[in-house]
Length: 67
Image (cartoon, rainbow, N blue to C red; front, side, top):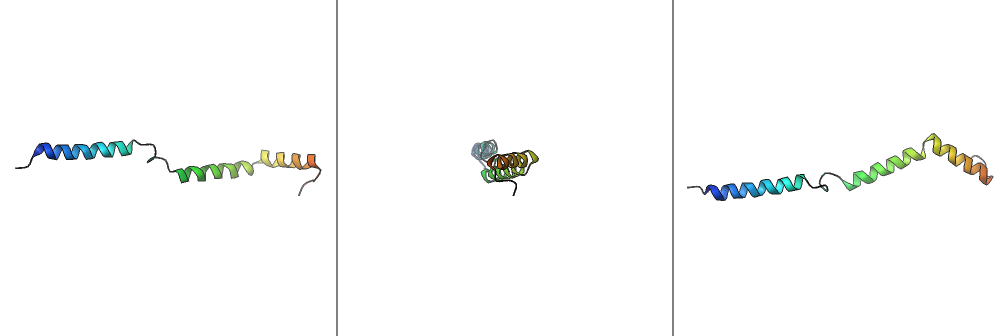
């Protein structure tokens, strides 16, 4: 005869472990993807018109002129 208590206990603990893993923040966010997103945002900001204008103003202020 199957011991239903042991079967329920084993499956219950497995379900609890799975639930705890699913609810963890570390399993939901990949740190490498976060770094790539930050690099892409920095590149986007660097290539924006406001950034280019700021670099041009700084060059004119230094006297080096546009390159």
